[in-house]
Amino acid sequence: MHSLGLVGGTFDRFHAGHRALIEHGLSECQRLEVWLTNDQIAQAKDPRIESWSERSLKMVESLDTESNRISVDLLEDEDGPAPWHEEATAILCTPETLAGCERINRSRESNGLLPLEILKVEHVNAHDGTPISSSRIRQGEIDKDGQSYLPEDAGETNLIMTKEVEANLKDPFGQLFEGPEDDTSIAMRAILEEIFGSHGPIIAVGDITVKALQDLGSPADIALIDGKTKRQEWEGASTIDASLYDDRRACENPPGQLSTDLFHACAGAIQAWNESARTCLIDVDGEEDLAPLLLHPMASLGAVVLYGQPSRGVVLRWTGFDSKSRCRDLLAAMDRA
Image (cartoon, rainbow, N blue to C red; front, side, top):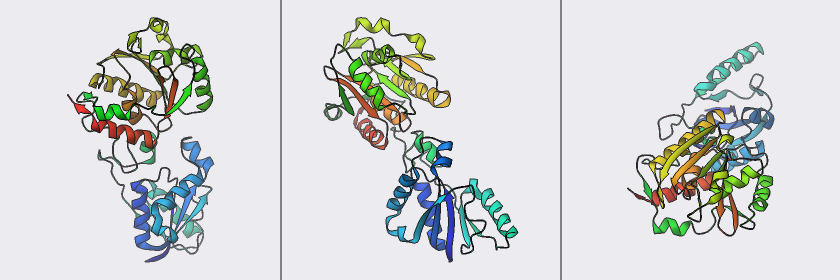
């Protein structure tokens, strides 16, 4: 067994693949030095990456009983101390970082040091057979264990509201910003201040919510409308400006359901946003009230979902692990048709 091994990386949203890498290292080394990339390097790659202190804390908490055999250090450049480290005798890598480890060994030889034994650890695959990665987790595709947030039959069958699900939806699913019903701009201004600097997308569900953002000069990135408010035709629906959006989609979704048609419209809009930041207006023939139950599982971490709460104001919910997991449970509890 090696006395000391090295491993470097970003380790954002510490997941099952990270755990497998560290556990393999601990099975081969008495101690591990884990070098985490600093915030400047990490956030240049993706601004949604958590801070060094958050990543470090979550790694230590996740490893729990093994954490006394690990030190977590700040990685300030590509190779860190590995090319000149005199105590280490091993270095961990995944298939993509193998070339970097080989480069480090060439540097060590130039520095008059013995090469490190390279301990290559294969990826842990997600439910779909492709590797778990932090980028996929940030994108909202999978959770930290590689599982989907959407049921296997999502998009293939209509999901029907049940009394159990309805009971779970009575209270606002997020933070309520109160304001008069006849002037939603008051609540919406407070929300825009709250979400300033978010990485998006900003998703608005409901005609009045969509129109309020439009009137404030901040149209949603993805907007869902059905021409109604409180299940009644809304005369202001005709003033929603479809020209503000790159794409326009249409779908059918009966009341109390999440149809396959709505599923594919939402999935297509979110994919277009993720790939090229294309905005989209979705016209729903029927009702869009339940759409957030699909939108949260589909959206990337840090997305914003807004919807109106009749007579009370506007609800803001950030897309995160909690909202995704809750929606996954609610979707699983719905009937199929």
